[in-house]
Length: 156
Image 1 (cartoon, helix red, strand yellow):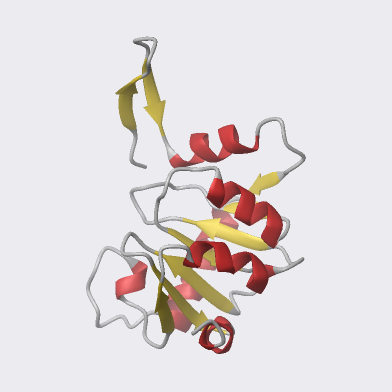
Image 2 (tube, one colour):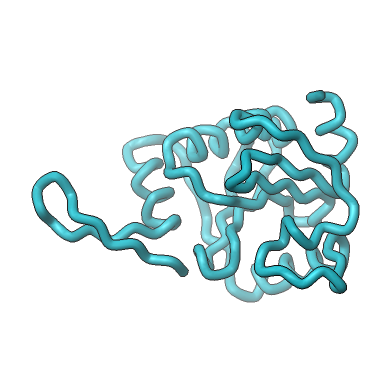
């Protein structure tokens, strides 16, 4: 997990992590998130790699290893994800080294609030069945694999 230290306006050294940023963003709201257990996280990553990753592609980031996908380039594309997720539960995770935790989020509106209120980092969205994979990266590209490929074509 990447941890960044910065000095606040009061001269206090503060520690930044994605999970801390998320928890801070939902503080005082009705949004409830759940950390995915380590065993479930490992299963999810394994399933994602089997379904969506071209193992011949060598890269640190999953989005550079996607085998079949559609994408759009739009700096606001992260905000479209709520419409795909709708009232369904989703799982958000991050690049290895940025954050180890995965979070289960109740619906698209809660996800959208979290994304709108947190620092801009690369993230991935899937579901328990890994029937889709979405990724928004630092190039403002939203990648879609699995069931999300058809949906993303409707955005163009």
